[in-house]
Structure formats: structure tokens, C-alpha cells
Length: 289
Image 1: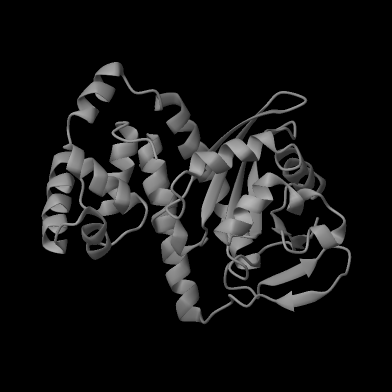
Image 2: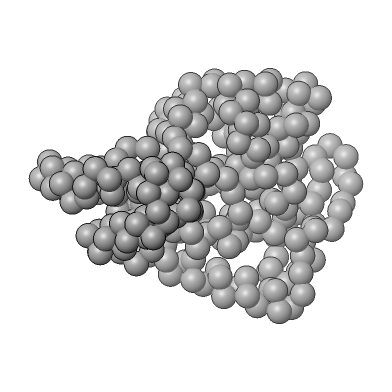
């Protein structure tokens, strides 16, 4: 398994470094920027922490992590894992705007026995410091991690760089682990620092969604009746990242007609943009992508 461990992390303005495990080689973080960039990132950190306090349902968590959080840790897929007992039992959930079925990844994450236990062990062995894994280098390092079904799906997604960090209790037992699947070269020591800052907020926000995740039967029934069949079709294509022009071509209607449908969807769901509409639809179980 190809792992890197960050040095003791300081404020975002400090020179960010990456230390390759087993080599001692030190390299400057390519994401390190100017003081103006640092100021914007500090502002983004504050905004993300504030946004985490507003998460009370899975849809809110989806909107936050696939929206504002991307400004700090750009990722294609986020796997949230809860750990219970010794030996640990895992519960996982996937969040992504770039794959039609993130639950496929979370299910595979749990079924692939080389993944969750290996990430957890690596994180604990590194004294709960962020773990970074390059899936392309994992087979060369003699690890089976990069050759399992979960890794193969990540290769198809183009997200072969993993960044994992979590939360543990006072006895050193892992409570949760958050794994960001990123495109190569997008997750350095600065992103690892952000993961350390945000992990407690992510854990608290996600834990709240687990408490309130089960919708009432009335919500499910009424949710399905909010949108017409055409509007649900359009919302599904929005979820898959299609533009109005592309949706129009697929459904054989004009882009203007698509735009009108989108405006109706936003009004009916009482949201202001497409990302919020997707989150609200997931919350109401209008569709299950």
C-alpha cells in the first residue's frame, strides 16, 4: 500500500510538506499558494464550519460536502464510515455528484475486505494522522488494496488518490472515518490539514443525519407527489450532471422547455439551485439514484 503521512501540521500559512513513508523524502506541497490564497482558504474554512452546523438531514450533508466543502478538499467521491465495537463493524454511506450511484461504492467499500480494515489500521498506526494512498502505486508496493473491486471502480471514476481521516474517542477507539477519493495530484498536505480541521465537524454533522435519516411514511408519500414524471426525469439528468441543452437533446425537447421545468422544480421543492434540489429530492425519496 502506498502511503504518505503528513508532518506535524501547523497553520495553513506554514509551508506545507509531504513526507513519503519509509523514504524520509520531503517535498513542498504543490498546492501551497500566496498569502491572498491563504486568506481565501481561511475564509472558506470558516464558511464550511458554519455550514456544518446547519446539517440536520442526509440531504443537507450531501449539499454541503458536494458543494462548499469542495472548495477545500476537491473530491469525486466521499465515503463516510461509522465504526462500532471490537473487532469493528462498519456502516458506510457514499456521497458524489460525479457518479449516478454512490451507494454502489459504499456497498463495495464494505464488501471489499481489503479496504475499510486496512484504512482503519493505517490511520491508527499513524497515531490518527491523515492517511494518503496512491492506488496506482499500491500494487507495486505489494499491497492488495489497489487490485480489489473497490479500487477498480475508483480507477473507472478517475479518483485514484485517497485521503482518509476520522474521529476517535478518549480510549483511542475509532468512531468514524472519512475517505475522500480524489483525482491524482489534488490531495496534498494542505488538504490533509483541512481534513484534520473539519473531521470533528463532519462527524457531528453526519451523526445528526443518522438520528434523523428515517423519514416518516407521510413524507415519502407526499414527496413522490410533488414533481411530475417529466420533472423527475429532468431532475435525474441534473443529478448526472447534464446541462439544459444535453437534457433537451436526450428528452427531445427544447433547452428553454427544460429551463422552465427546472424553475418549476426549484419552486416546488422550495430551493434556490440545482444542488439543493437534488439534496431535497434525496431527502424526500423522490428518486433513489
